[in-house]
Length: 434
Picture 1 (cartoon, rainbow, N blue to C red):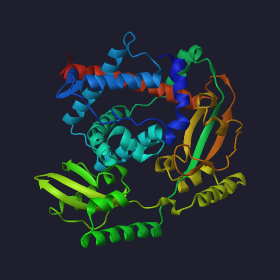
Picture 2: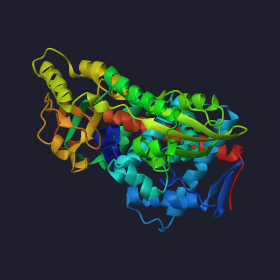
Picture 3: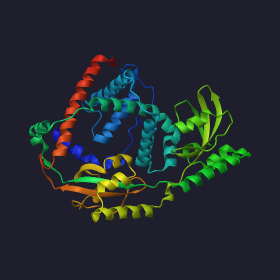
Picture 4: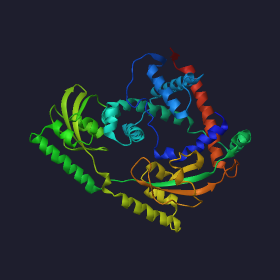
């Protein structure tokens, strides 16, 4: 990839990526894998033809490149092999990730698929994919755990790589001509507020769950109540049936309650990040459980949208009147913990590289401007955008663009370290293309 392309790609990555737009990075939204032939093997890990075909389709969708073109198939297969090599190394080195990390990524992937492909309609997702939401999440869990292991080891390999000012200058001198004219950019920061259920909303959900449990204990039909009241549209339509599952499939609180049950027994309302569950153990075979549940969600809309807008408006006035710094407010109040840690920093955003749907939010922003509260694209909640600095279209230079040049120089150096590591893994570990 040319330096110019790398530069533009980096500049375009700031605004939308941080907001969680776009498809989830899962091997297949349907969770299906046909045993249609092995195209490569890395250690004990096979790469199936369906894996390769899925990645080729994603490559075409995201880059607009014909997957049948010269070298594309080999490039994608090489990338899959490299990931499997890193995974094998992670197993050898006993790299681990927590269940909390796995479940957080599963939830994020599900939300991206739900919003990106089904406009937030869980019933439509279940009908289209033929899978219940919890079933989809279970099927994604193992692949996502592997992805996280790969990410952790890859990040560890390059985490200590750094560049000196002299290396940044050398990078600039080497690539000056290929950088060309840079588009107008904004050093963008963001503060978002999303609805959060208060204690009264949690109490209402718990009371509803207890009422359903009381009905079940006096003889109400579980399947009927699940179809009528469960907030899980996939399993609810099936009378709450979750099918058979092994240990490690469900989030820890749900699993702990389920494995404590005897066949036919009902759990007390069990709280997870999804809400309150009433769980029934239908049958048990060793460590495998056949479960059904009723989910009562906590109504996060208890915090009204008007309240969010009013709160953001008051924070905006603090910035505009000089009474507070935007970065301090973002650290203290942003609903995004990741963005809060960075003081709301999104980074340098090239306006002409932003999706046209979101471009009007940025056009016309001047240095120091803070937008009025705007709805979050693709999700509940509102955001403030703050332009710390603006730059018109210009030739790249070390004075105005040092941070971006430093980032590009670091990416290049990390890429060189990573490539050398992959070459070593290909020497040290077994792999073969079939």
